[in-house]
Length: 115
Image (cartoon, rainbow, N blue to C red; front, side, top):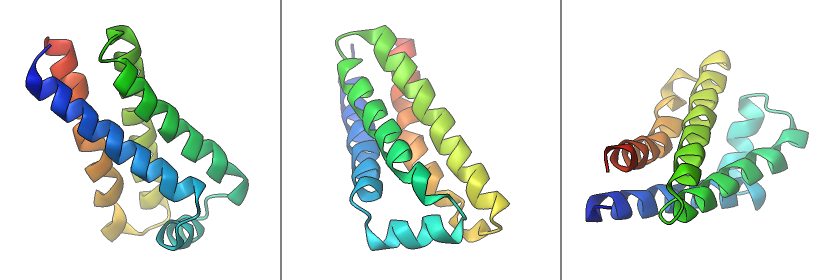
């Protein structure tokens, strides 16, 4: 396992965890965005839990690589779905935001598979 893989994985987990916390604790900027995108309020706890589980899975994946791969794939799919949701809501200027969170996850996944 390389140092780059460890650092990028920790960064990806931290960013995903932060994003999960923002949803679960109803940060105003997230509440406004999810409302603008017409995401049902009943989905918010599940979305936050999915990101939190992915963040934990990335960290555990440092010791159990198949779990890290599964978590990485799940988070990439999650953030891809978020970008699609933003596009469907026609908030095109917001599309980069989920992709910023997805980028370190993709990096961690790629470095993990390359190791």
